[in-house]
Image (cartoon, rainbow, N blue to C red; front, side, top):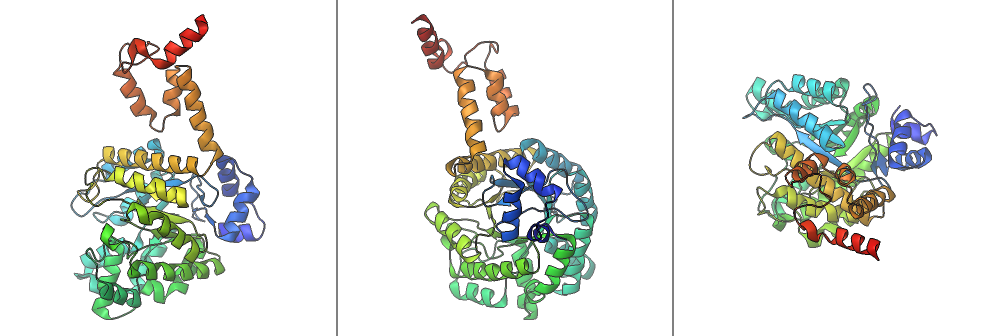
Length: 428
């Protein structure tokens, strides 16, 4: 039984109870959101994680971090270091996007070490193994793709990105539309290449019932991927992107009818003035389904600082109703991220998520900021550091401002405004 089916039958699972506790809500609220399909709780039916996470309406905005090898850089120990950083830096979920090395073993190891829900993009493994074994992506079969999905489900994956909306009709619209960057989704590109070569429909779309049956069996949450997301600002909110979103809304309805949890993925590169429109489109066309956005990145020229471009877009998207932010690291568009890149990307995305939670009036978010304000008024440095989104960095920076036992810092020194006013009021 899936979390969705349990909620509809009036049952309360331990995962629902834990999410309610962490969100400061009643279990009934989580149950109702799941039953309506406006919340998801990614939790593989076979292998539960230590930290169940709720994503969707009325909950705090969550942050995902991507890790994984590439064909040019295969170092499992480094990826495990990144996983540990994901946990320490406060990511809510992690995705293994590996494309290099022994992919099943890499995923198995990450799953065994992760206390966080784990997601994958199964087409990656299916494509890479087909190319290795048969010499070309065109030899991929639907059976191979579904075999990989079930294999990953059995290992304990909690959610999967599946690009079901990349159809022959949407590819034709993309061609007629004319884009600068065409397709920038790796999964979307794999499927489009196969479809164009064979002149056949996307098996994830054509055999969607088969996918739903697998997802229901293992309670795999489907993250319906945006294979036609814009890869530059000039391509944002075009016909191909919107047609895919319409397909995803229809597929979301079918998933809910089958008892399968589902969320929708979104762009991408989007200018600031189109972000709210994109969120509103998704919420309308997909009937309030949880929305998982990559960024959005608000400029194409921030390479080296794309985590900042992502945070700007993520804050606005979250305020407008996005539920789940996929981090971007400073290495985006340049190289595979290092462990330190991963940390910076997570913190940037968490800043965006928290800023949006504040704008949405989340009580927990406001209480934390109020506590920080009081700690600053009291010049209570330990309390301030503990309340930071990145206490480790805050402590390091503070340690570089001697003497550490001083009430003030070296920015204002003896002219600290808070200290001056406090001392004056004491004398008065």
